[in-house]
Image (cartoon, rainbow, N blue to C red; front, top):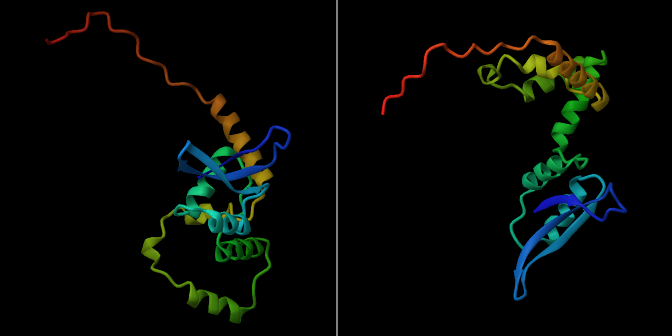
Length: 160
């Protein structure tokens, strides 16, 4: 099952297809057509599928072809929104903060050192991420290249 562009006249449309074997050979069935892949589209495709349907596989295929994807668990979507609000200086009341802290208590040893750096990117728009990526690529262009060592003056010894 892959999400792929549909007709050329509708460049912003994609479809989820399923391959099936018939008497006349392999055929592709369209399970759902979408402009943005979300939970509703995944549910529709899952209901029409004849074979086992794995949401993560379809989401990965949609990302691969560049289709817009908003299929993320509600808890993750709300957590991202909360973190963006906190970063903007709008914190929940202390009682709710304490409840969240208790509910989210985890073994700190399981969190790596980069979680704080990654948290800075939560709530950042795609335009800001793209601008940062462009700046990073421009930086990579001006970094000095490592020079290759010159060829040795003596012949290579080959042991056969």
